[in-house]
Length: 326
Ligand code: DP6
Image (cartoon, rainbow, N blue to C red; front, side, top):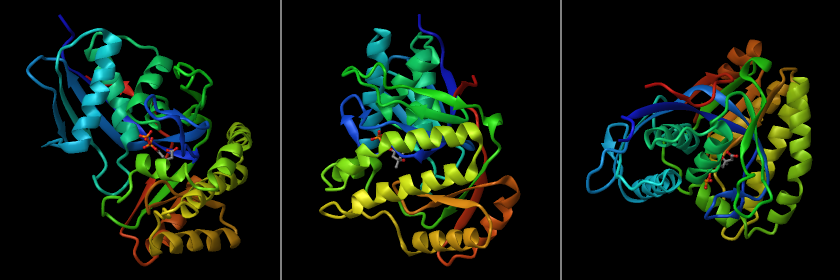
């Protein structure tokens, strides 16, 4: 008899040194390591029950999941079933605490919550490293959302990926930073991270991107340990811009930004030139996230909100890792 339904919650994370490229697409193994900050309040709750029936059933924010989304969830449940050695079909419901479709409700939070809830519901009690490896199979960045605070996900060397797991660099209490996010569109992104990475791998700049990763990771690790915002901000900005440069040089080109994305960057750089330490990072979409001190967050938010095309501004802080809530 399997345990009853399990519900877990996990927060999204913001990559400071980006994951952008895979060494194994099936196992979701990254071409290089990455470092992130788990963010409070940008959470997904997932409830999983292996309750039998003919087929798996999925509900996302109250609506049945379909197409590719359902396929990706089904595939992830197959991985959980394989690990647990059981065959029962499941019902899965996820609920996001961030409005959907603003490019901040990430697959990282969803698959971290699903890895924890799914493995428990299947009768497994995985330690955090094994949970991280499981979450990675759903979405690479989910490997990091198992943990709170500052997190490093290792590339690993093994072909089976057992060493490609995340670990804590520093707890959320280590450093009270703010991340101010500017939403520049609510339209769903036209190119997913997964598809974007596949395209970027053929870019002439891709080898240079991969070759530079270790140095970026070392710099970011040291900056986190020293709580050096200037050092961390500059490396985060550079990692993000290099990631986007790889896409720009690809054929066909890959550009996730809109006009407001660019204007936000200029606004933040002007603020910085005037003495406020604030640093930009951008993921596979047009939203801009800014790293700054708590005392400067209201000013950063004000400046971003004044950029034409910015629809909404959200401020968040370091958050906790995945937890079982019911
Ligand atoms: C730009 O983890 O969503 O946010 O492993 O294919 O599911 P898959 O990709 P995903 O990619 C995240 C890319 C990124 C950078 C990062 O989070 O490190």
